[in-house]
Length: 336
Image (cartoon, rainbow, N blue to C red):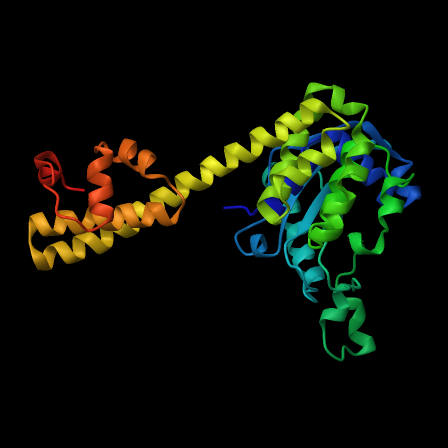
């Protein structure tokens, strides 16, 4: 299951305007000037296999280059620290694309990998030959060589990202959040400044939808209080403040649901183990005691527990306090 960083990357760069703007400004001008970005389209295929998935995820775009086609792969580096094997991994990745060309009986398509990294540690990209220890000069020509575009967000200042390097407002906001996500105190202070970039586009429904994605990412990866997010965005877009509150409540409910399920599972396991030793009635009591205790640990109220378990709240309270209570017969007959 993808983590929040990976999901945010994919949601950001599934918007072709973001992908085009990013590629246009990070690629060498002698290449980007020859790309027809009006033809860019997302390929609904990933070339990351099970092994490569440990290292990065990808968004693959095709577009016209002069009279032919070119593949631009946007790759998000999962690791928060440098990996000297990156060139080898990229080589394997590109071969997978060309294998697909062969299988589909298509001409080979040139691949430009663009790697996005937002970790704290400095990372200077190297070539494939650097992966070899003490490689003799006469053997260098036998090692495949290729270029790739490596973007370390820590090399950009907030002001540079906000400035003229990129054009698309939503891309700027995403990159600024990405860059600062591991520094929550700085991020919290800068949120209003970052959101101001999208003041004009937040009047559009699709931009507000993307704002929801940004808020979810902040909520899932930092301890920034949602009230601070609302304070930052409400002066810019009142609707955005409402979205922030709604998104936070939705995520809180989802978290409660996951906690409840986990609590129920743990409670049932403990209760049934004891039940096998102490008999059906006592075992059922222990099972429900453990269920209730685990749900309470996950901040689920006794009222909610009563609804979920189809029990009167007085029964819930008694079981929670280890008081004697008659377990309803239908619960004794259930398999739990």
